[in-house]
Image 1 (tube, rainbow, N blue to C red):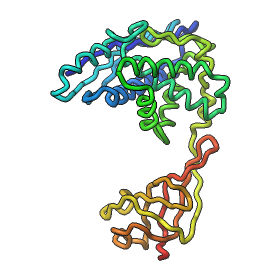
Image 2 (cartoon, rainbow, N blue to C red):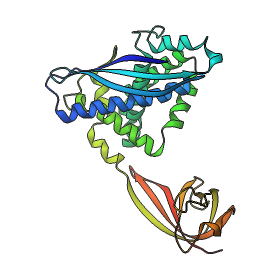
Image 3 (spheres, rainbow, N blue to C red):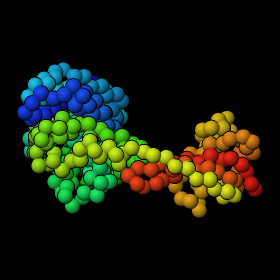
Image 4 (cartoon, one colour):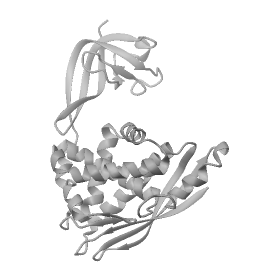
Length: 300
C-alpha cells in the first residue's frame, strides 16, 4: 500500500530568504521526514515503511518562505494485523490526533528535529536557558504516545537507540539546517503543518555557530601489550568485519583493523589476544571517545 501525505513548512520571514538557507531547509526537511518514517515503523506493531520519497511541490522564496512537500510512503504490514492497521493509517492521515489534527508524519518529524536541537543545547551547556525547547519535545512525545498507544518511555528508548554517535551528530546538523531560515531572520516563527513554533522557542535553538561542537576531530594513542577481547570476526576481510573491546580503555566495542605482519588466521577463533594497538579517538565538543583500533603487532 502506498499513501501520499501533504507536508508544509512556512517560515514567517519578513524578507526573501537566501538560496543557501532555502536549500538547507529543503534538504533538512527531507532528511527529517525520512527519519520520521523510520521512527513510525518502530512504533506501530507489524507496520513497516518500506520506502519513503519526498517531493517538493511548491517553493515561494518571498516573504514568508513557503515550502510544500508530498511525502509518499510505501507501507507493508503483517496479514494478521489487518484489523489494526486502518487505525494507524487514520492517525497518519490526521484523523484521530488531538489538538490541531496534524498528521502523524508532521508530529514525528518535529520530534526528531527537536530531539536534535535538544542534543545541541546539552552540548553547549545551555539547558537552563532552553526550557521551551525541552517542553516542546516533551509535549510532542506525549502526543506521539497517545497516537500510537506506546508509553512515552518506549518512544524515548526508541529515539535513544536510533540516535547515538555519528547518527546523532547528523541529526543535529539536520536540525541546524532546518531552523536556519528562521534563525537568520530574527528567529521568525515557523509553521509545520498546522503546528506553530513561536519565535521565543526558535530563539532557544542554537544557531550555526553550534556547528563547532559537531565538527569531529581525531586523535590517536599507541598502547602496548594490551588485552583485546574479540567480539566479531571475519577471516575473509582483514580490514573490516572485526570488532574488539580493550577492557583497560573502555567497555565499549569498537571496530578493529588488522595490519601486517598480523594475519587474520593468526587470531581467528580466539576470544582474547594481546597486542600493540593504535587507538583512534573521535573528539566532539571536547569529549573524546574511542572509535577504532589498529592491531599493529601480536605480543602474546
